[in-house]
Length: 113
Length: 116
Image (tube, rainbow over all chains, first blue to last red; front, side, top):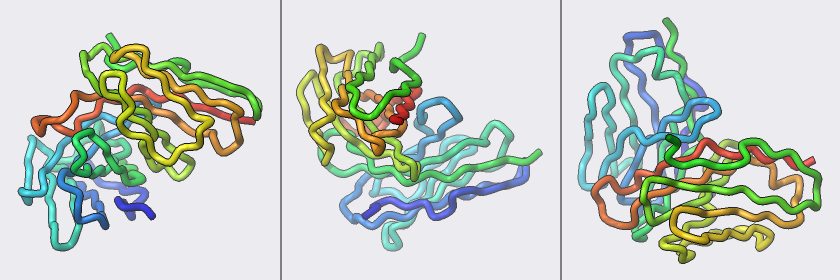
């Protein structure tokens, strides 16, 4: 049973527009959520995170929103740039001391010029 | 200078063979991980070591045996390889505990294992 789901395998957005990537989770024990970005033939790299005590965290062009009641989070990228084309993974952390991350299956974002 | 490096990056082998993937990190972290990305693209944790001690051991066949000679290295040995072991294996590291920057794993580039 997959506890973190990204239901959109791919997303295509025009350069300069907003990209919105979505993620749903089922385990209410998750207390920390993260987004990772992955280019082909590279490992995932950390992008942005949010604690369960917050509902929004912003870092430059990237904003993550958390809706705990809906068990939903989203990543907004604005404005979208061609270099943002990558696979984005949502991840959630259980309260266990170690960074045991549960990942979604990723969404491939393509930014069109 | 690569922070988390894995070798080999590509590995093609026959069923039944034994193979190893090596991982080294130069970030000074004390916790290392192995994740597996399967054909459905999910990244799933397999093992985690903190200061050479096994702290996370998910439901993984005992044909998989991690070894951590020191906190900068975490190797993965796989015995009697099966077709279903074909996947990309990612090594990662982080600093243990705390919530400042927590969850920020630094990943290697991955090792693509193909079992024929």
